[in-house]
Length: 231
Image (spheres, rainbow, N blue to C red):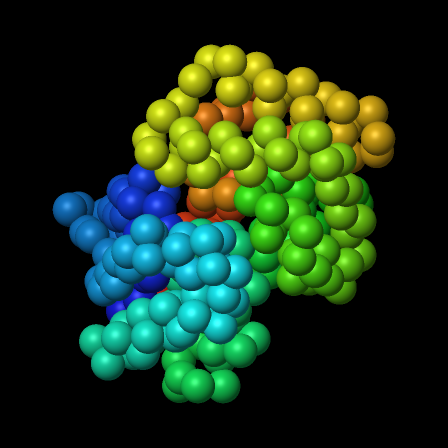
């Protein structure tokens, strides 16, 4: 089994979900009491937020992720997963500076959407995920249209992630608002919805919405195990 390198801490809540799911999938695939061969570099979310939000310093934020990737590489990992969607916008800048590949969350998600036969999806996440081109560009390369929430919807989603979900707070009122937003996006043409923040699947389940919901946490973890056990 290949050694997985995971960049976590963004937030610890979703990182814990990744660790649990990766090991559950490993045991299911390999049997017995098998667990994943994994190294975790957990960065300080507060330091990252101060760089990217408080100072608006994308370069400093990228450097934090680069140093985490280098640490993972030194630890002997054979590929990297980042347990956070929006941080993947730094992958193109970091990839030439390390020797091991990233398993990109948007690529894995696009493949899952294609397999489901869906051509248009709503994208939920923090503002960087919803507003930067890295997700829509990858989806477009797979023939998938991206539908972005409107300004009020983006504010609701982003603020709930930063003020609640990353603090392990999951409220029924927030869940109900997400369901309303997804229904509105469905009325604007979305055939499915990407839960494009790795905390959102901890808030919403498939039963909460009327369209296929693509949990990026689940998709990414499954892709990581497929890669880890591949020859």
